[in-house]
Amino acid sequence: MLPKKGRWSEQDRLRERHPEFIRAKRKHSAVESDINALEQHGLDRCPDTGIDGFRRYVSLAVLGTNLHRLGTLLQKQAVQTSKKAA
Image (cartoon, rainbow, N blue to C red; front, side):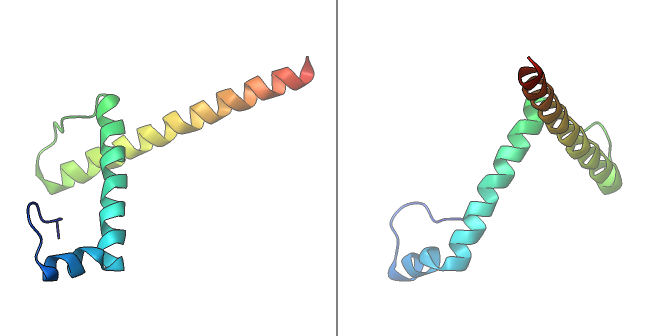
C-alpha cells in the first residue's frame, strides 16, 4: 500500500505509523536505489519480451551489478596490499 497524499484522517495516520507499513516503505526505497544503479549502467530497457525474458534480463542485470561490486572490492584490496608492501 502506498502512502496517502494530502490530508490524513485518523485511520490513515494509524495505518502509516504501523511498524509493518514503515518496514515496507523502507524496503521499497532500497529497491528504488537498486533500480537506479542498474539504469546508470545501461540497463534501463528490457529488449526481451514476456515474463521469462524479463526474469532472464533482470537476473543478468543483477549478476552484472554483483560483478561490478566484486571488481571494485578487488581493486580496493589490491591497493591496500600494494600500500602494505611499500
